[in-house]
Image (cartoon, rainbow, N blue to C red):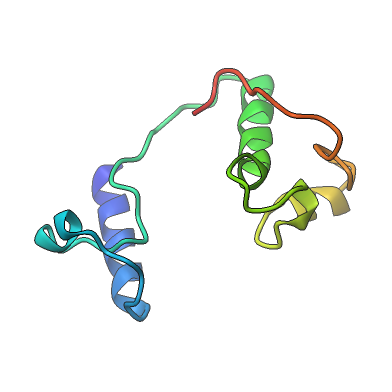
Length: 103
């Protein structure tokens, strides 16, 4: 799994223009500033586990202050799930989440 991510990140990093802020530590290691250094692999155990992780992914832009409502993040798969009827368009708009078992 790590080798795959390494290849994917390397390929992608070479195909986009540089320009992001890169710390001295990352420069020393020849790393781009677009990637977090580590990743977390998790095997989904059941439908509830899957649902919690998708809720976390969709809530994350709100959690980090990038938008005020989930629906406002244009890059999210949330919009596709709204079209499929999985989420309502205003999901996450009126409450704050503490999602357990993720992150």
